[in-house]
Amino acid sequence: MKRENLIDEAMALTPAIRYVATYINGDLLLKERSGIIGNSSSESDKYEELIVNPALLKLTTQRGNIDCGGLNYIIIRYNNFFVMLFPVEGGHVNFGFEPDANPFNWIGPISSLLGKH
Image (cartoon, rainbow, N blue to C red; front, side, top):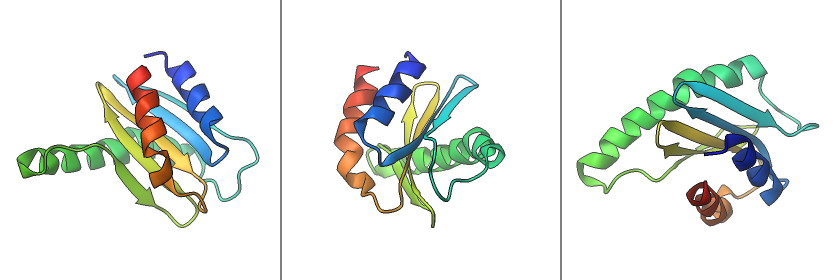
């Protein structure tokens, strides 16, 4: 997976995507669109990717594998933005959306993008 290409292509999908992070095999790469309002600190973003999101994915993947047919993604609504978190081999990819966006509209395009990479 060319993560830099994935991030750039994701950001080009729509201005509603304000942030993309990949955490693959212990390596974190993230990019935030400039000029966004209500962003979190880069330090808290780092720990969200290193600690919170892997824990959420572990819990929901284990639950999904019991009798739910697995896990495709998680959508979280914070007050200032949405995040859409996808498990991938070796880690995850996180897409942050503007608070007025509908992340459900972007599941198909993002899934296609991930499938391409």
